[in-house]
Amino acid sequence: MKNPVARREFLKTAGALVALAALPPRVLAAEAKPAAGGPFKEAIMWGTVGVKGSVAEKMQAVKAAGFAGVEMTSHLNQTEVLQARDATGLEIPSVCGERHWQLPLSAPDPKVRAEGLAALRQTLRDAKAYGAGSVLLVPGVVNKEVSFDDCWQRSIAQIQLALPLAEELQVKISIENVWNNFITTPEQAVRYLAAINSPWVGWHFDCGNVIRYGDPIVWIEALGQHIQRVHIKEYSRDRAMRQNDVGAGFDVALLAGANNWPGIIKAFTAVGYAGYLITEQGGGDSPAGLRQLREQLAHIIATRA
Image 1 (cartoon, rainbow, N blue to C red):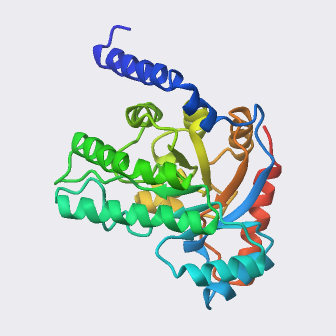
Image 2: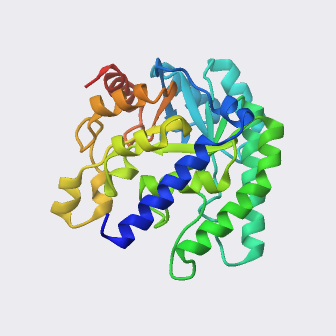
C-alpha cells in the first residue's frame, strides 16, 4: 500500500475493527443478533406522518395504513402517546431526538452541549416509557465553527455522560448517518463506535442519506451487527445532477431512485439484522399516501437479490 494516507486510513480502520472484536463478553452478549436476519417489520417515522389531527388520530391513520410500528419523536406528551399506542396496538421501536440539531453535542458553547445532553437523556426516558429499545441521535455538526476533530471529541464526551442512564433504562443510543459533514465513510463510522466502546451505542442506518457518500451495501457490511435500526428512504443521483442540487435527490418516490433494494435487503439479512425497517419518505400526507408508503415498503421487504 504505497499511498501513505490510504495506509493510515487502513490501519485506523483495522484497529477499530480489532477494538470492536475485543469487546468483553458482556458487550458481545448485548450486541448478539440472530445468525440470519429477518423477518422485517414495517414502521414509519413520526415526522413523515403528515395527516392532520391529534396524536391519537395520526396513530389511527398509521394503523389503518397497515404499519406495525411508528418511530416517535421525543419531547411529546407521554400520556397522549401511550394512550394512542395502546389504543392502536402499534409498537414504538425507536424514538428520534427532537432537539439534536438545535442543541448539538458538538457545539462550541458548553452550555449548549449541556442542554443537548439533557435533551438526549429525555429522549432516552421517552423511549423507556414507550417500550422502545433505541433512540436516534445526530451526534453533532461540522461547520465553520466546529472542526471534524472538535465534533468527534465533544460528541463522544457527551455521549459517554449519557451511557449510565442508557444502561439503567436498557435503551440503546443509535447514531444516524446524516448530512452533517461529519461521518461520511463506513470506516469513520466503525472507528467512531470503537472510540465510544459501549454496548449501549450502535448505528441507526439511513439508506437514503448515505447514497451521497457511497454504496449502502458497503456500509451495511462494515457496520454489521452494530446496526440497531434502519431508515428506508430513496435518493436519486440523476435528479440531483440534472437540477444541480444535492437536496433534489430526495424528491423521488420509493423504488424510483438509486437504491439497490434487493441487494440492500440481502445485505441486512446477511449481517443478521432483524426487526423494523422504518420509512422516512415523503408522501404520508393523506390516508392514501400512507397506504402507498406501506405498500412500497412491503415491496422492498419482499425483494432479494
